[in-house]
Length: 452
Image (cartoon, rainbow, N blue to C red):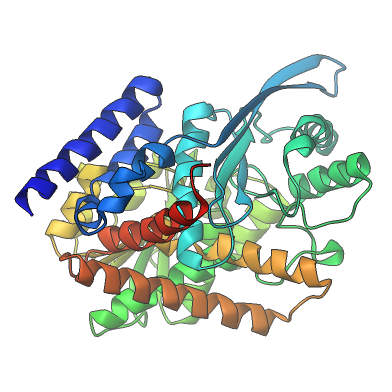
């Protein structure tokens, strides 16, 4: 057994070093791979067949990477050129599935990190979905509707060749909401002369699903509810710090408030607001969903709130529960230590990898209940999977039906993570549990399907 342990250590280190060599400068991708590999040594001990079949070596290499030019014309008539990406990472469990991100920070390393995470997140839902991600360095903020439409149409002029309801089904992410999905779907429909479920997050009038907008936020709260329940408590009276002010943050705040919590912070890239009396969500929704404005406007309308120019100040506000729902690596070691010192008992990741490895260690060492993003924020892609089901059947379910299915999926994810962590000697470590159970499903499917 000792020899196998050394072999497992050597294998994960060798695979990681190969990732560094083949993907220079892609730090987010490196981080995501290492976080998974660090959990898998006991799995490799128990399943030497995975080693023989080179599952790890195959898993960290995308099945397909697509990079393309996206030319479009702005309202002044000037030609602009952006870069588009789609990384189809793994299709062992079903058609590729993962969102599109439009933001100036997007490059191939970000897309690979997100696509790699998506493999395991989709696996946890137990729905038939592989892992993928895509996007562009185009930033829709400050652009007119016509500029966004022209960009989306040009983007889809290339992407349509690589997607479809049984091949690859993109959805939204940062910078890609209802407006962008509508333009993308319209162009896909025109180019292919088909009306299919080739994208999710669509409008309710043309194949979208109830609860899709709320899904990631609601699912996050359902997952954290189980974490709190394990500690013998619930949401009632809890002070909740949330970062971000997009769909995830807004609907996590809504569900937490419905369950009796007091949400006291939200943020965007220009700063954060702290409202000790509790965030008024109707104001946030108006600013963000109607006006497409900035979070500072909230403090101008509510005297109980203070605006901070540094959005990271969210994590220096005393709270009981933290829900990082903005972007990757937003909680570092210092912020994590302050959260622990201020009495935070639970952290649920609403964004993808929002805690650095050092921050995650701080939480786990301190006994803080910690829900990793690939498990805690899987509600969005779970409901996208449910939208795919509805599209295939040419029918739609009620809000109550979809919400009940979402809650069941999130509860099942929690139970799977707890059981796997216990089985592999890491009781209460949901990071290990999520990585182990999701990897095992993908590895078994890859074994069954041969060398492809």
